[in-house]
Image (cartoon, rainbow, N blue to C red; front, side, top):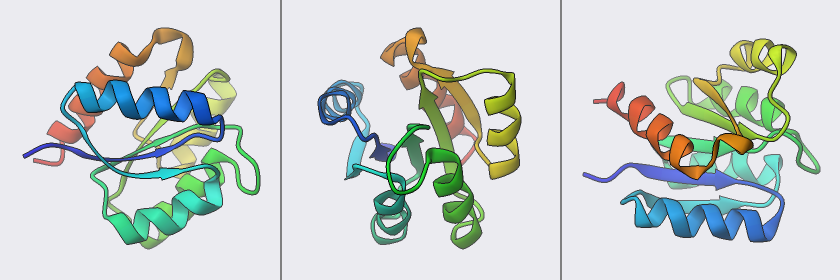
Length: 123
């Protein structure tokens, strides 16, 4: 069974790159959101195993989107993938129910490993 992902990233070329590379890693991409508000709706509609969430997005940032998703889907796993990960962001992410924060500079390979680790907790 492949892990079902929802990718929430406002920069289109970054979102497409994540979709392409994570698909090559065997993940099933069930949705793509261009902002946090769309991510909340798609999380309900697509039933992903893991939501990969950017932090800085229009209409609703990634942490508020994660909080709202977890309010309606308490067991939803959310991975924050952002260029802006620091101690304050990590603390706010924990409060929002984010499973793990991955700095974008760590690369997509690190993201794929963390998604796999989070997904193993679901089994």
